[in-house]
Image (cartoon, rainbow, N blue to C red; front, side):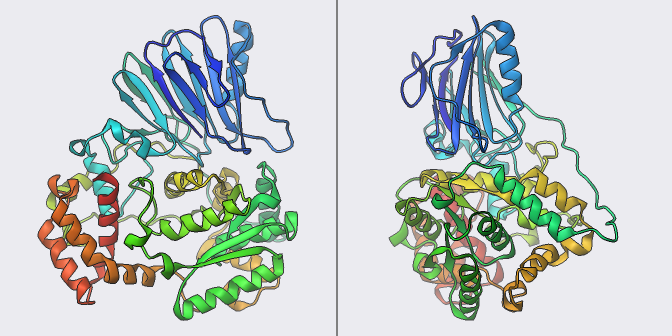
Length: 512
């Protein structure tokens, strides 16, 4: 939602709005420019506060400008009110005692923070902070998490000294030091017993409708990522119910029988809703294909299928789209209570991961915030996806990741959550047939990834080995075992764990 550079020497409210940012000497705070957002600022005799936040539906936006002078009492009241903003926001307060940056429970576009030469730097895209890091300063625990695919929503990033501002938390910056303040654990609910006449589907539809209505967006300039999965399909149908056939949709289509099934299922929903649709073939944008090498640096957490996904977003933006809705959070909203995981043992990991990586994984719970209002994995997905949307000029909408939806899911008895019964039953009630509600073939990108590894993996691995990598120098991966994986892929006889080579190559690209 913002980027910033604040000097530790800044201790006065002498800030001005210059048209696209607030400035004071060499310090500046730049809000992300999008009609979904608004800015607010105020000051008293010694303090100044800035807020970048998601707009409330039906309310006129605050006009950007220099901080408005107010009395001390009015300032305190305004800061308390701004801190309680129940939509996505970041709040920056500068006092003679230091700088505080805080955020709320909703984090569709979080900020990363670091300190360089006494200045506080922040950005929604962690790659903009790369100049503050070096290959020697990789964060072992986070690198191990990424390589083993055991990620957590955490303050940790791939680099030491660069932190994610996690939900409801704040950081205090003073004299060149950054201190994190964590929130209290959020309260979670248990499944409830339904009344005999409980209208579960009605409640689900009303709540999803209300969550969408709480966001400020322009329907004609909004698209839905309609993969055909249960989550995006339900979001799409609720958008259609609210606005009629004015929205756009799009997806990456798979190949083979599953792709033909996906095509039929999507066409049924598009006919129902009247969306204007954009379709790309996933195999035209295979991961690791040098033809689709990113034009800008990508962060270590960004998705492996970003080439095709980014192209879809670019097509939408060219068509005037400014908001992109997705079904992120639906899996976790209807998830069952997790079963305890057995302790990780070295044999669980791919051969190319070293004993040093395994040792780092023993500390993987560190840096994890207290229990959030929604799931850890949903928050991680939001953080991973945000840079891709914001680089494309789109603001993401994640209605199923709303805390109200999460609480509703927790209340449901298990039979409504198991195998996403709620989501499937809602689509059935709308009149969709069994292929839409219970597709017989699994639709995933496993075959797309296998093709990418067979076609491009060997060359990419050997290039990494020839040029060197911080992952090898840091003893996170074993070069000989990666070379053996390249041979297996070249001969089109990969073993099960070879699919994870793609994530090694993706992480190498991000940190090299």
